[in-house]
Length: 267
Figure 1 (cartoon, rainbow, N blue to C red):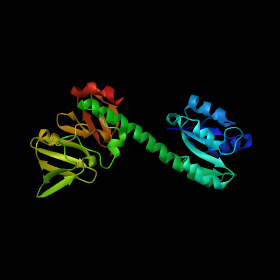
Figure 2 (figure 1 turned 90 degrees about the horizontal axis):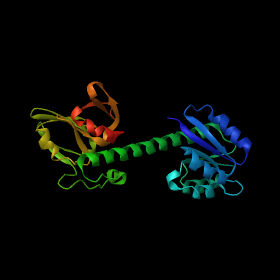
Figure 3 (figure 1 turned 120 degrees about the vertical axis):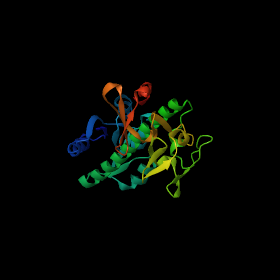
Figure 4 (figure 1 turned 60 degrees about the vertical axis):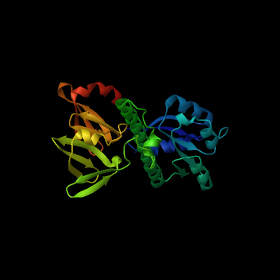
């Protein structure tokens, strides 16, 4: 997905130089240019860029004042452009991803773009996670966890569900963090718990094991399959009205037609 980028600098030659350097980046799409902070504030609201290269020293609103004028809900990722490195501390205090010095060096620009791509990926992951947490709330009929609650190390599990699961796998007792579980499937009186590190086989029914799981985080998608909804990355249509869930590990799980009414929640 392209990084929709806005360039803000009162010097036309500086903007032109940045355009030429960014032309070699296939995932960077320049959607606008502004010569001052006031125009930049309006452009952010209208164009909704993912990334903004922002000059620090401009007449009228400087770079820092420009950021203060942009609502948090509209704020793109920001890379400051400046001729003076003493602005670096203020740039990071303003939550900029990075800053680059004029004249811009290709290696330094590449480093800044690397950081931008990392933060953009994190933003997209957080948005996706929040959507899936909302789905889980709809499926369970309970209030959905917020993203902060789900990511907090001390997140409180639903009443009656343990913070860590304990079960017998062969001759050993295993304790597993539910967040590490990708999915669970069953056949008869045996079931497999697939985690990030290994697959545990235990003698139990899916119904018995399901009672230990937080219904805000786990959903049954087939009569023999339970999935950790936060691990779902894609929903793929199949034949005869069936769908497959693609997990972050690349594994595919069938979504039974009897759960078809839940598809709208994934879109």
